[in-house]
Image (cartoon, rainbow, N blue to C red):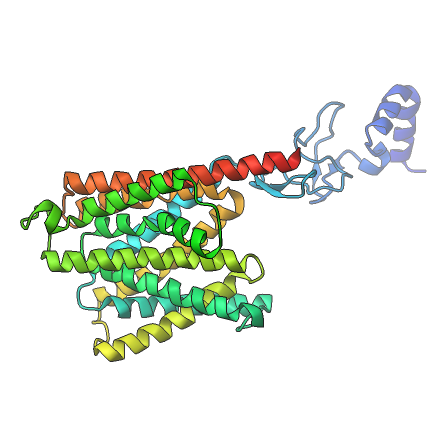
Length: 394
């Protein structure tokens, strides 16, 4: 026996109570520690710990527990009772939504700043970006490129309607003030209620009719037709004919977006979301190429600023979609829909700061009507879904 063993034995005989306390607390004998203790993961020596000195906080798993040993704050946790993922950081989904609207608004601003390219060509370049980023995901998840046979017609409609809505939105942005085009496209929830009632046989309530009337009022205030507001219209940065074309394109874009949502509701969760974006990009690119050759508008973007802006438009569009998907994964659809109206706020701010265009009172009034309609529709659906969830629990 060496001197170290003798020393440990003498200490144990002199203080048996300390040995019992060490055994109860799971501390190894002093002969194994040899004056130091080791961390279970890093195996690095540290000072001898007295009773009550615990290197782990109460919130962290203790050594020996079958849990992840981490003192970091976990943003996404799984509820043990329901098994659903919940966000432990309040407001994270709302923050993602605001980032998404900021990216979408910035993308629309850059579309407005590009003057040498047609809106269809800008849409084609964005579709190319989406294809490049979605393709690796399809290969990784082994989703395939065509989808289930019974869902292909709906995937085609989703791609055609969604890409058409994007092309029309870009045309509207180039033909009329940025905020006006953005606000009119936000009338899509009203059209969604109408088409869901007609095509999906969903119930249309009195509140839905009120919100539709608010939307129509807002569109009229922004469009300002001459037979209601006179031949001379103040506050337009272009001829009224261009303004009218942009208004019609924005309304058609809202209709296309609403029909896209109806098709997505019809498909449900039977199709992977990456496959839906893939159809959107492929059909949109084919549609843009045909339209460009028919219009004779295809041209290479000039070197320098235009090419840089096109790359930024593609990246911002992808970033906006990514943050929107993340927001919907950890937050209910109602708050996300309400916060998406921040897109209108950003559009007004960008228009005033970068385009030197001050909106008129009629434009502001129309924007408030449409935003109120959109927010009201989202709140109503949120309330109804929460009410049904509580009834199902009972």
